[in-house]
Length: 544
Image (cartoon, rainbow, N blue to C red; front, side):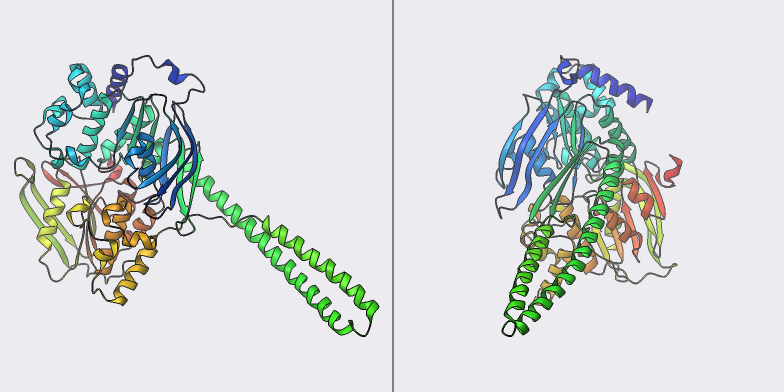
């Protein structure tokens, strides 16, 4: 950690020595957003409604919200509204005062995928202008060797964490004055996550970032933007608070509970009041019918009384309009695995591998791998980025795919390995294809908070979190009793993630997973294995 701290200090000395005193003058605004509204072109549904935000030099702003609520869209819009104009309409203003924005997208751009690492960096003008000491500072701040810039390995063959690091290096070479990061914690190993937290906290420039990692959010954010779609995703709402994540959650829950209690109390009182009013109204009305012809004077009195009663009713109606609203917030997803547990001595996996190689077999990643799994065991494999965790899980999947006594559910890190971009969620989940099957699938998608339109969208139009939900439903509908999961929680929101963790914790079958999600690992798994060059080794998080 001392080396990392030193490297971080070095990088900021090297790259932010330019005159930026105005950044730290009280009241200086880096980016100003006024009345920003973003609508889908497809259905004209608002995903951002009248958002106003001022970004200040010390801000570490976390954007949170359910999957598909427009978090990435908002980030892209701040970078350049043209990035979303093909599928969204934008109103409002964004002023950036010529700031140099460093933008990390959620996925590596397709045009870079087949470039070598060296070719990727050569496309950046700042790379050729950087001094060796500057290159060294950035590499070491990312926990990498300076040789990282000159690798002949293609970007597509890198691990998810390596892609993140190399893209960050490219961004830092450009000397940004503000960073916008879309899921920077995705695919980072546990040690690099600790680095990322430190990087965000100690950054001398503002950072706006999207993350589903609750630990990262709790340790870094000083401002929260919460994007919501309520009333069955028909109404966009946002909350901005200049507090940390844990404080925001606590305050939000307290405010919700208080508003709900106030609203329910007012409605109980209103119900009692209206019951009494209705009794008075009906009594006067009854008396009027009886005496209207027989006693004109009494009738006149009762008519006057009825006018008074009706006036009282109108007053009650006006007061009802001013009652505390029942608070709205997005509901968590709902789904449930229902599988018969295995016998504790049933052998699910007995895997041995002398050498774990890269996909192109150009490099040995690990030797002497051995893993046995029995019954309803839940096993998590951790390790540094690039050590071969995904490759190992893929090989385990291949070794189990021919088994007829178990039903495998496989969720890859790269969803495109399985998903057909032309399919809709309904197409992907269809088993029989009859009316009853389609109806059932729609009901399940609804429990995952998909709108009717989203059920028909192509899978490529959906957010990463929505596609993750589709995978979870796929495994459920197929009755999978052995789950092979590669970073399953990486795209789930802080609202959905606890539901997913709880369901997998109580899953009746076997789970073999790769993950860097610290909360997920601690809550769900019985056994943790560390993968390194010498194989798989039992590991406990407490030993760090």
